[in-house]
Image 1 (cartoon, rainbow, N blue to C red):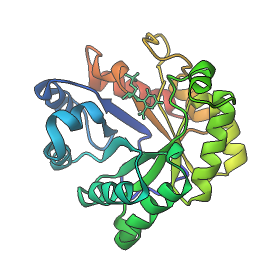
Image 2 (tube, helix red, strand yellow; image 1 turned 90 degrees about the vertical axis):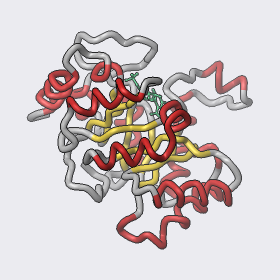
Image 3 (cartoon, rainbow, N blue to C red; image 1 turned 180 degrees about the horizontal axis):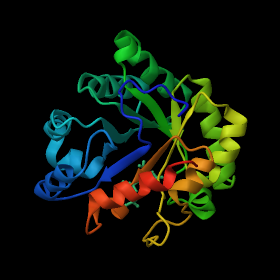
Image 4 (cartoon, rainbow, N blue to C red; image 1 turned 30 degrees about the vertical axis):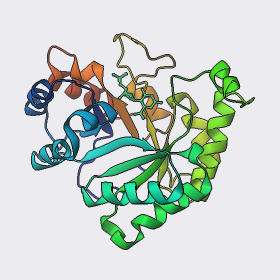
Length: 240
Ligand SMILES: O=C(O)c1cc(=O)[nH]c(=O)n1[C@@H]1O[C@H](COP(=O)(O)O)[C@@H](O)[C@H]1O
């Protein structure tokens, strides 16, 4: 682990809770141990169930990564990040493409919280985007080159890390140093289906590539035995 984590959980696994049914999500949290993973709450569950849902998970002992990918004018993003911090989340994110002034405003909004501030990271290029999607919005770089550019900007703004593809982790680690968290979705344990993810890696491959935190959803949440799926992922990371 390279990034400072304010909680005692050492697991690199962030379970993506993408459910439209709160009872199914609660049933899952009954099966997994808050010392063995953290939970990611994204736009779907936050929009349906709101801050109370985050508080429910926290009351069950889970650290929460609030994945709302803020992208707006600097003042609005600063206040949104401060609101996330007031909720007591462990990590929060913005879009790096919102620019340096927006990211600096977000970081500055957390200064009053000192060591109690959540980790603040930025999304570079979504793992669903390819070169043609970037060209459509006027960007002529490859996704990897654009992601590196945005990650460099994120680091200059003093944020704690980035969301990126595990395939970018090795070059990011070399070029951005060790004191910078790499958070990667698109992780699939050996033998599990890629589903809609494209450039996937297994958990041991991702760890070897220098990833700090792995966002893993369906391979755990849709498994017949989610606790066993999580245990097997953690086991596969032993000794890597
Ligand atoms: O920010 C994210 O978490 C994210 C960024 C990205 O580029 N790609 C991506 O898949 N994600 C999220 O990571 C999770 C992946 O879930 P699974 O594909 O089920 O493992 C989902 O919650 C996605 O929304």
